[in-house]
Length: 539
Image (cartoon, rainbow, N blue to C red; front, side):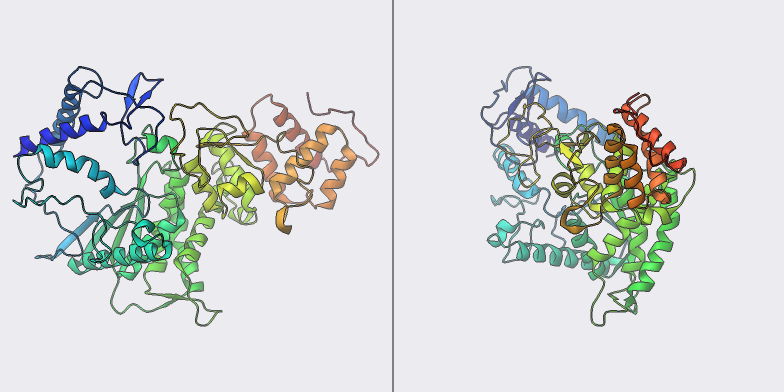
């Protein structure tokens, strides 16, 4: 029976590379399979392979890949104890024994409809296998476990299409289903048991739905670790906003007599809990958005230990998961900014970072991690969210980012109609990668003087405005700007200026101007009647 099933996998592999949606990868001289994007993509043309030949996509190639995978699996499990595999919906599964440990990798919100994609392979397995796929003797021709709204069972994802396009109904069904599933896991656990949940998603809504479901099911989250489980060269990582790691959340059962909490106490406890964890994660070399999400677990313990958290100064209202996670993300970002401002941990002054505006905080984090080079949009979206912004705001409102990679549709997702082999766009285009705009590109006349929607002017805008004034050679206007905005005595301004100097390339015009400005500020400015020649700071 096992050999029969392995042979069906080979046929599935051939089908993947033999459909009319398979395309040619020009740079690699190879074939891109049907599911390069975990979704069906429109193609202008397709590439045909010879299934009985000896090239990519043929039967022999599929056989080689399948046997290679099996060899690794058998080697990894040769010392493992005998296991029992039972395929059931968790909503219908009745545990016969008490479990000490539950491990689950649940559906990732709205990311990938695995059941829909499985249908493509399942029909081939049905046709080629001599026995039922699950080995149960059941010969019905059912497809994969897609969501059944009437039975409220099946693959649990946020799919508005299953609810007539009603996004609210879809989200409620996802959250309710996850809570029911986790509640059953809770019931099956021993009092000292643990549940580990593996999760990764770029959108805050997905995390809020997951965390809300965990709390409703009676769990306390008391730990989280980012573990690098994703291949950086996979198509989904290259062209979408994907995490490099999955976050593993460790949960324990919440006592039945747990009482409601108050937001002021919970937030204070959260800050105390994650202060030490942040230092440990930083010292362990965790960086980027993975660092932001790694702090989620330790922070959530303070919140999830209560069935509900009330607002002390707003009777009748509760601190939502969204509000709590926003507080967590901002504290983590402030910590990272503090490390960057102090030279990557040479000293700490988080109080200074607390006053750094969102746009400047994002600019500093992006510049620290990627410089002025292209950066994956996924990483940048997560950083933006952590700073309380969106990537669209950073592009259109704050004029900080510009897209530079492949093609992205208006929703921020990969354009299904795009040419898969299209090259990079110019700076005015849209793409799956983004870059910071240089200070010379940020030349809007209002920059540094006023901000959109009457908001405070970001500190990075003030520095870039000063750079333009200094390059123009009019020190009188530089001094006037410094005095009007109270920058001479602002410690955060000086520290940001120094950080940007250290992040600028040696010998660049940018570094030269920043150093000249820093020296000018440290020297308390030039006499009011001084007028430097045009272009000062170019050398």
